[in-house]
Image 1 (cartoon, rainbow, N blue to C red):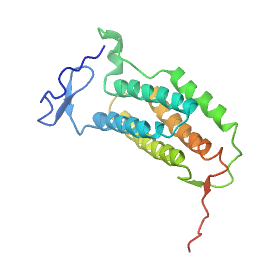
Image 2: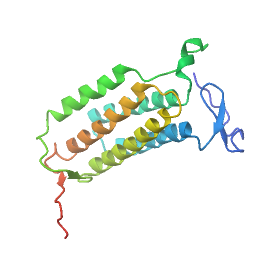
Image 3: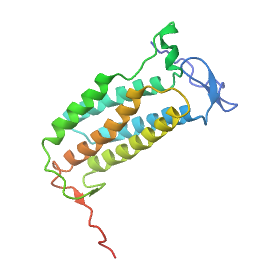
Image 4: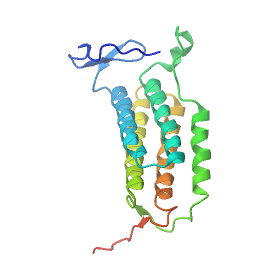
Length: 190
């Protein structure tokens, strides 16, 4: 259980922050940048939920919770020490990735196949889904970069990869099941 009685601690005033294992790193470290971008995605998703119906809103709420799990995963380094920890580290698991895949397949079954790339936009909900999609892609790139330097849960990378696909498909659903998608017209303004 998390208890936050005091919001500011002053422990980060020198440009460092604590990770989930208690170690301290620079606030500009790749690990902090990666989970900070996941936090940014979660905030963008909070705005997106304002435009969603009950069903999609419930799916987005589940994703927001997963994103907190993902942040906890990323802020706890040294996966190889997980078995030694007094308290188990929270890690993204394959079932969370599989759930996204099932939802993508279910949503995509409602859509006609694309015959063109689409431009982000259309309905307000779709436009917000595309913002979430691009922030998810950026978070994925940062986590992949982090994985070149330190150990990272492979399921975390998979989760972000599927999540950006989920937002793409959900963005099409938000455009009247793709009927209101804005198609890219190559070279239209030459």
